[in-house]
Image (cartoon, rainbow, N blue to C red):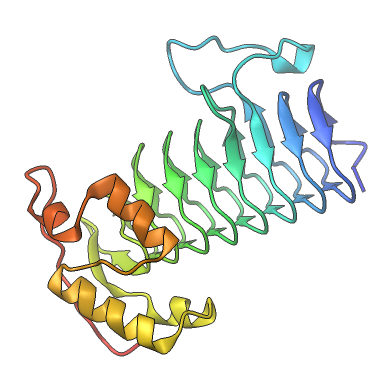
Length: 241
């Protein structure tokens, strides 16, 4: 299951049924959990791109930094690049897909069931919530929060946080409505979907879901979020679906 033309360095822990394609490079410290698929040419575990951090030669056994963790059942497609964390493991959650040529910088946390599409760049320290979908060639500014169940359009430059269960696209990016289809696929009851659409439209998000609670902790009440001086008000184009 591991190509003889792949390089798996010291400090790399491999789970069961891991597949690694030719030309892939995996440097430690790194944990690859069970049933992970890593495509040809994928690059995992290079040091953080930070000028104040040593650019160590991990392929010689010089192991530094906080590591990478690829969780169970994740798929890392060809030529994807994932860097070491500087203070926490750069993490790809269970069952997530990192498509070809995507880039995850240091300390990025990707949740479960996420799709990071081809050519996406995610800056350092970002948090990508469960079941979110980032469209092709989008770019996520460092330290941004992408809420669970959200969808970011193709080619979108994301310089501000994206609330849970919303759709964001445009340049500059704007929240353009609620990701109702994504919520339906995740099994969210229709009554909660309708309540969230109304709540976002009025800036009054108080539903008791874990993902929304996480957003509340990060940003405070949504009406406060829209009025903060460092953020522009959200605009909506609520259309069917």
